[in-house]
Image 1 (tube, helix red, strand yellow):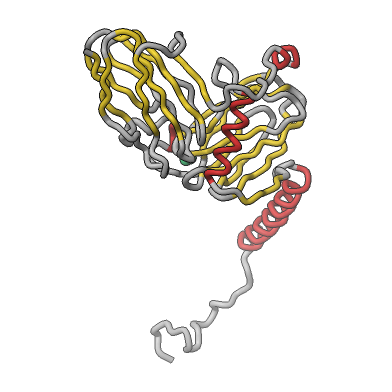
Image 2: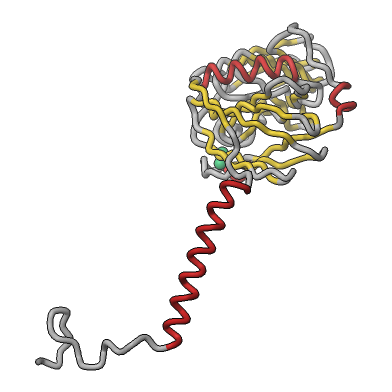
Length: 298
Ligand code: CUA
């Protein structure tokens, strides 16, 4: 036999000796670990409350954004959050790079939250509150998540699916409050649907009209606006499936209109002196992507 090692040739004598003791101990440890981990994985599924019951519906991004806006029109409060009384469903739209709207729920009550994505795949992850909720949120499907949070508090939502350059900014909160706090924020009757104003004053003076790009591009239909000094109001219609708002900044001014989605109108007003200002969308990532313009006041 040749001394060279070969996979077909006869092995060198003595290679097939019995397992030494340390090898046997090692095999027993491996076997025990495998059994323990398998049992743990099975138990995790059965007793770990890991599998959140969800229902799924097919819905286009535009339809879903319309449902979300109708929900915000009814439950949206002055603070920009949606206060959802027990017994009603909540809605949340995931788009780059925001969760819309921020929800307020009542402690100890079971809610169904419908979540969908308006653009790309996102990951819904609720941190704390004795919850362990991780869901992939895809466009064209609305995921109904059943959720009960016991202790009042502010629980963070993060996106755990890489969705673009602003991914790490994509956080929000689910607020859990006492019944008394919830009772202080009753739903609105269906009136003045789809509109909201910020800036302290009712619209008046010069009203400038802007529209968000209807296809969902991060842009307005105009990039230049001008108005005489005094009260300036910008009213932005949003026909797109994404949440947007209109805001004014620079020259010591910093006012933001409410965020709205399909069918909503965001209005912002400010007393402006002559100068150059920026109007923009304050949803994270949108201004950086080009959703802004110049407002010249003379
Ligand atoms: Cu959305 Cu990452």
